[in-house]
Image (cartoon, rainbow, N blue to C red):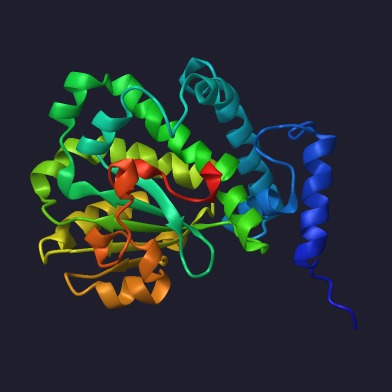
Length: 272
């Protein structure tokens, strides 16, 4: 007796048809129209067609209205790889893409120990900084992942995120708490299923209390992708990233000396 439960392929086909029929999705929309994009929303809602469609509709509305101009206009206004405040941002809240891991996934590296919003906002307005966060998120799906797919020749829909919290304590956490919460919301609601794995390194024992707060902002699916390790992280990272692709400061060999350091290089196929 055949199963009455539709397959994922059937759900995807119905999802696509309903999005177009209800004019939620149109050819040429910058959110993307291929199967990989639609599957991200379906996986985020465990292939519940109704909930995935609601999520997609809300995402499209956000893309049109965010910051009063929409994400396409923001992306025209600020190149995430080259904008005037970029060096100041990277000095005070380092957050950067750097090459790919052994599976071909783009690597996103963040160093929260260097966080200093007071210093940052002397050279960059909070509004410009938030715009940089948004266009950075958009660049992952618009440029970074497609470039990784092109080079690897295989489907890649997610990134590896490495967060170094050496020197990060409660004072810095309270500085960035609201921004971090907003960033997680943007990622989960409007760029679902783009994080394949999150590795937090150099975590002190005191991080447990911070993590208990952060977990309240995350879905259980996101929490399941998080690994927290202490100072003995090199073996874990080198199990996922070739030594030549991992910055020296994380135990690899890469320095990107010609660009002033890995954090400023943006090195990866997305720049080719």
